Length: 261
Image 1 (cartoon, rainbow, N blue to C red):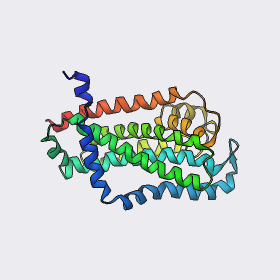
Image 2: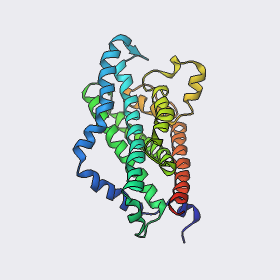
Image 3: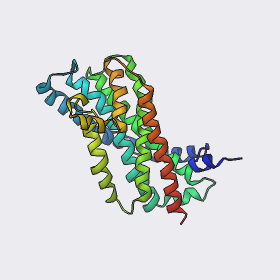
Image 4: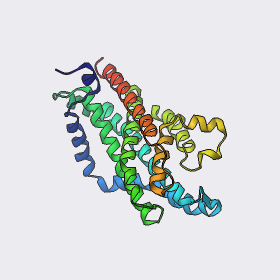
């Protein structure tokens, strides 16, 4: 018998069909898609890492490009997962009506939502792994422990994909997503320690930054990529996991209300 929580969250293996469907569609245009996901973060890494880094010098004993690379890896996962769950998922839901066709099969809204969220996190992982590889080739990765950053990045992708799915569930058009990008993603991108160390900011901003999931992702990934001392990991991961679970549950409730009305 399926429990109410399982039914609510769509915790069955049927979500894999949605993930596989998206993968097969993406595979046809994989080359341009990967280049598109790599372009912006790679530009930040090269332009700021070498250009701005020449002015900054070292941060916490690291060359600036080494400090920056770990932040860009996390930010790349955030942006890729968020945009996939907003623009691409909204297109499948409201424009192409792909979800309507899927829901005629024996799948529930929870299966569709979980398949979309895991697919977006998978794309975030792929984008972050590509940036990690480029950073390694540039000498901005300082050890094999950096590979442990990949599961952390995937968890970040789940959190941001779930948060973006909440926006998709209530969006009436594409313009609605600009509010989320401008008011949530961009401030988080700038204030979560991606470009600057948190201890260089005013105390109030530091406290606000620790509420943001990206800050906790960077706090774990940066030591793994730079061999800086790695503190307590689980509190950071639990914060990110809490964002993922809470946002996903809310998204399923809102999607159920929207699609079944």
